Amino acid sequence: MPMPMPMSRHVIALSAAVCLAAGLAAAPASAEPRPRTLGELAKKHHKYFGSATDNPEFTDAAYLKLLGSEFGQTTPGNAMKWYATEPAPGVFDFTAGDEVVAFAKAHHQKVRGHTLVWHSQLPAWLTERSWTAAELRPVLKNHIQKVARHYKGKVIHWDVVNEAFNEDGTYRESVFYKTLGPGYIADALRWAHEADPHAKLYLNDYNVDGIGPKSDAYYRLIKQLKADGVPVEGFGIQGHLALQYGFPADVKQNMQRFADLGVEVAVTELDIRMNLPATPSMLATQATWYADYVKACLEVRKCVGVTIWDYTDKYSWIPSVFPGEGAALPYDENLAPKPAYHAIRKVLGG
Ligand code: G3I
Image 1 (cartoon, rainbow, N blue to C red):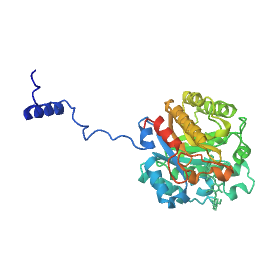
Image 2 (cartoon, rainbow, N blue to C red):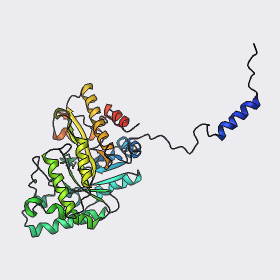
Image 3 (cartoon, rainbow, N blue to C red):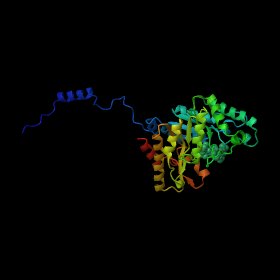
């Protein structure tokens, strides 16, 4: 029986040359690197994945390292709110917001502006007196335009009006609604558009994840605003969920109906809290919920991205507002990734 011929050096060299010519050699140096972070993974889907942040956290180097590397977008949790930006009438202070914007720029992150008009975190000078419509209107216009002009070109979105409706879909009786009537929303959008024509202008709220009276109110309002030519361009679904209340129904369908109205949609403040202590089974459910929420956004073309409301339990707003609850974010208090982090990675294709 003839022995197989040993391959000569000549044959080896020849086959290597053929492989090279056919492009079968090891991955060429120009191949795109594998996406490593949540931000990079989301970008593959033409979306962003971001985190809120707050200025006191800027002294925490380990926190900042992850914030700057893992996320493609950031939202200042408090820095651009009225109490921070106009602490005295007509006196503006952009220090805190500028710090967030500078960090984002240095780390190639998009910024969502949050928020121009909200009933909460207003300065005392605004809440501790009464106003006539003739007095409040110019104050509101000046606030919106000074802040939006300052951040022109630096933010991709503005949450122009935040939390305008009650749970039953009636207007929230904020100082703006009570003094100016429901038209303050259209005015705010028009004034913001004049100041920054390129930022996408959003209405933003919580408990609007699924189809119900509150999201219906936004649906009707946005439809009317579009019909009136008012520059509304996005609907922000905050997404503050709690395990004990169940996963909202129809999340994707709800996003899609807003997309069909001609506005984009963003998940702006996602977190999923639970009653403490967190058990492995609760953390597993939380992971599934995060993945399902992100998946809904991936499946709606006009859902532009997901922002979590800070990324670590170390800096979550939940325990101070809901005592006994927490563990709401994908990283724990030691900045270690939780099952939710891995579930988000997986659904993004990582
Ligand atoms: O600035 C004071 C500081 O001087 C004081 O020493 C400290 C003592 O507690 O309080 C500081 O103010 C806190 C502020 O955040 C800034 O850190 C308030 O107590 C605290 O209530 C406030 O919480 C913020 C909350 O909005 C207010 O409603 C959270 O950080 C912020 O994450 C949260 O974000 C909101 C979104 O804007 C809108 N959607 C809901 C979301 C969660 O409430």
